[in-house]
Amino acid sequence: MTGSDDDGYTMVHPVIHYASIPLVIIISTVAGVFALLSWRIFRNSPFGTAIALLTLGMVAMAAYHVILLATETEPFVLHVFRSAINTIIAIFIGLMVIRHRQLRQGQITGDGEWVD
Image: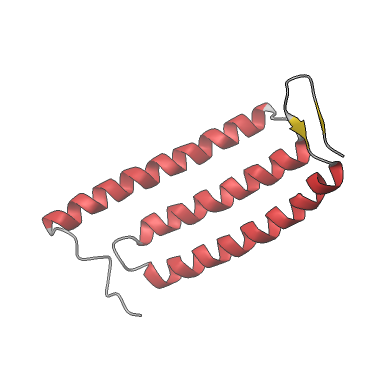
């Protein structure tokens, strides 16, 4: 049954709330596996490191949301965890900008031979 609290936010029925936790775990595990498989394919390409950072960011973000769903509040540890996730995302974006500039100038050839 839905209701609303004093702040005007709609509360979700507890069954739906707790059923979403395993769903988030399953979906994030599948996304993490696909990201690792993509990294395995592209690890010798110029974007291999960026894909590895993106994989770490995806797994960390999924873990953050599972913990947030389970605790229903945001303790200090989750603030620190979210800060670490945002740092990974910032490093990823910076790495992509650097790689893009290197590719435009023709300075990068990759870490090794890229084989499908």
